[in-house]
Length: 114
Length: 116
View 1 (cartoon, rainbow over the protein chains, first blue to last red):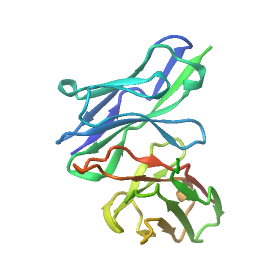
View 2: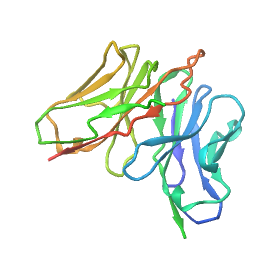
View 3: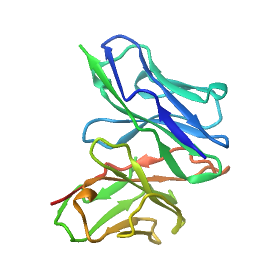
């Protein structure tokens, strides 16, 4: 079975400070992992993805995530938050034996304070 | 680059009416997914199609049906609409790589359905 747990439903940071959004997954097989961002009343945009290549993945807008198999984690980070980063972020897993479904975490709302 | 196109973008229906949502995947993408996102909720998987055949089914009510056509576009048909069906409905498309892995899903902007 596969599942995705986003450990924080809300994260609040000050502009210019680091961002850490946590994601843990469970998967019976070698997973593909993704982070998507959703701005208010907008669709889902892919930030980055891990598909069994390099464990440190760089995405758009300065975000990156590291796949740690031993910890079953895929945390999203950014060195310096910008006001435009305020949005909801979803960690998503697609499992090796079920290529026809993407499993969403419950989302983390990121608030960036001036 | 072409993206996933959903139509209509907004739809208002009354209870017990029917609605049809359309999704046009990215060219050469053979897999289509439908998701429902209620207010303040994360997207819930409804159903997916691969090469015009249903490939997986999630929490899709019996009142809903969907299909993928020969040109790979998909339609989600919703009947006997209820107030609780009000949500943002996303369609996504993907094309597995040679190893069968989903490299990523490209999402449309969604159709916002309001049932009154």
